[in-house]
Length: 301
Length: 257
Image (tube, rainbow over all chains, first blue to last red; front, side, top):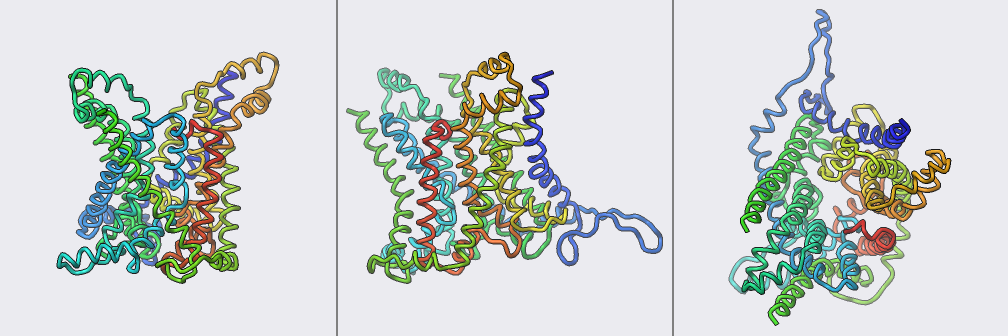
């Protein structure tokens, strides 16, 4: 009895707060997806009473959902966002793995400092980190001159590095990199060095023991990091806005536009929900497939 | 010999990634001291961009707003987050676990637009109050995680001992439990503070017209293009977060592992 009061007195306030400011808004958004967009933005009133007949109609429809699913433009944005996010996740993985492994294998003395060095850039506002690349890739920058010099010496036309899909992906990778490094490190740190030594003693080459032991064992870290990079990168609307061009707009830009400029709330809600559900579903699916095959592979050993 | 070779390859890869992480920030900071309007080539050392920055009334006001919002949001979220963290450490409450963990995993954009819808539909005027409410909501999760990870492996019997010796639940909570997890609470507060200070996406949707925070001000400057004043502002923000993060890691090292 005593314990029960403690349990509820402690958890009641946070539960109520999070229901009001997280769960309820999300439910409202799902609900708005079925409403009818108002002529001047927002939504039409839910219940309309006929002026003469007194007949009550409920203003709900599937039109926004149908429109979103049949719009070629939305699909195009959606697919592009998916492709960008997948490329971003893979680049992050490639860049993170050696670093995470280096930190995990380094002397305990330096480990905390190295880890802090990974975290520091991650804590400063991401706008600043995008801005840093606006300078580096800018039309006047040394990087831009050097790359264009190379391109032109091969006989191609000069390109604009900033305001291109490449710039968008570089920034997405840069912003999200620590999200991949930290879970990978947390996983790699726990590996038993004896397993590698045993495999080497039994005649495996360095690559073999990496492919057959370290990599399968680090799968949970890769998946956690992958989800942490993939999920937020799809909704990044600021990056395409600041460093992209018209051909690199992402689904987030459409959602932002629906809510702040066009004021078509139902369509914006549908798009946001479809985006969220699909990234979560893909992350879950990849997780299930990897744990099945990875688990099987490990069990067969 | 061969393992040595592997670690060389590894160290090379690791250093490349470190350079990728740091070169942009170093370039950014260096140009804040460059005596040139455009961020190209080194002309000479100057502090004039910092003078321009501090003379910029709007930007300074936005920074002060951000600090005030961050102090309020992190303090409220520390109270709620500590309660949730302790509750989750002592009892199994799946619903609360889900409420705390899902916002961390959900895309920020979704959280931002759903809060915008919510505030507009209940006719809540968008402004500093809505920003603080929204920031508190996403900070709670991080404080809860910080407190919970601090309590991991903690001996619960000290609370039971306090109770047995006649302390009321509230007294045991305030005089025994809180002091023993204080480093975790402070780390959670610092984390919430930096998160609130740096947040752009959720603020962007819940700010409405007329209210400004530092990230919002920087965003509108970025849309105008590159100026060394932004470099100066960024340098100060980076330094500030550097200090806060170092304190937070000192207080709760297990938070980042």
